[in-house]
Image (tube, rainbow, N blue to C red):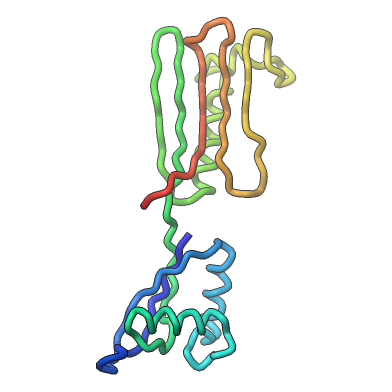
Length: 178
């Protein structure tokens, strides 16, 4: 993730007041921290003991500005989350894909697609692959990623081991945008 700091300052050659933007890569946790500092008026040039202010002053200087204070902080996510369903049956196949800016929304779609595949009224998987205890029946395979609390790529893959034309793969992947 990148944070965009919209700053107020002065052009270092003309001393004319100006607004400019600095982009700084940051971990997701830092966005909230910086926003709290901004709300407390602690992202200003006069707060010289703050490491981020020193960095903002130095970056501003290299860009030709004299840093005064931050007026706005915006999170720029440099990627999207791609949720894909790749499926095949004896008589048809397809790829459905969905793009999200938000990981939680993408994960919700990923989980709903798995629920749909497990629904016997919608998919062959729900009526054939699992027994009443949720175990995989003989002749089928299930391979899926372990979910954690972290944002991560996920996959869920079911195959008919007796018929290579029948499978369903659902994935959630972060795709970086340059």
